[in-house]
Image 1: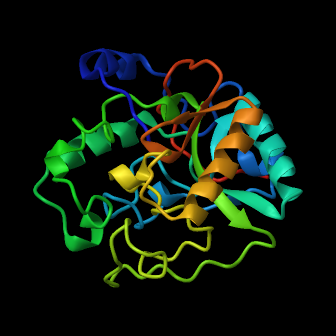
Image 2: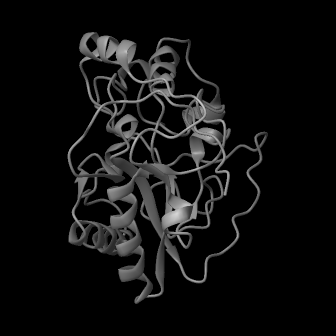
Length: 250
C-alpha cells in the first residue's frame, strides 16, 4: 500500500487534481483490457482491508493503471506463465479521496479485532511514523501496483466472511483471511517487519517466492518498496488524480 509523506504539499496537490468523474484519466486503461489473464482481488473495493469497509472512489473492483504500467505487467505475467505462475493484483490506481480516507481512519479510535489483524504488533497511531501510511500515494498517479503470485491454473478463493475471526496477517496462511494465492510469508497489507521484502524470519519457501516475484518485476522495470513485498512502482510519477473507479464499459 506504500504511500509518501508531505501532507501540506499533498493537500495543495489534491485541491488541483483533475476530477474527471465518469472517465479514466489521460493514458489510463483497465488492466483487464490489456492483460486479462492477471487475476484481480481489489481489496479497497471490499470489506477485506485494514479499514474494514470499501474506500471512497472504489465504485467498482477494477484495476486501472497507466498504459505503460499495464503493458509492463502483461510482460511479467507472460514471463511467469513459463513457470506455471501468474499474478494477482490487490490495488492499482487509487483515487486521492481514498488516500484522504486513510488519513481520517488513522485518527479514529482503535479498530475492531477484524482490522487489528493487519497490524497485530503495532499501535494504530504509529502507522504513519512506521512508514506504512502517509499522505501521498504513487497509486494515485497510476504508476504503482500491489500484487502477489498465484499458481496456474488459478484457484477459486473461498468466500470472505465479515463475521469470521481470522488470524493475524503474520500468522500461518491457513488461519488468515482466504486468499487463494501463494503464501509469501504474510498477508497483503500486513503492517509488520515480516512484510519487509528481505525479512529473514519468514520460511525458506516464502523467501524463495518473494525472490521470484522481485526478480520477475525488476526484469520488466518495476521497483519494489522495501517495507512491503507486494508494492511495486514503474516509471516516472505524473499528477495525482481523484477520478472514481467505475466499471469498464467493455
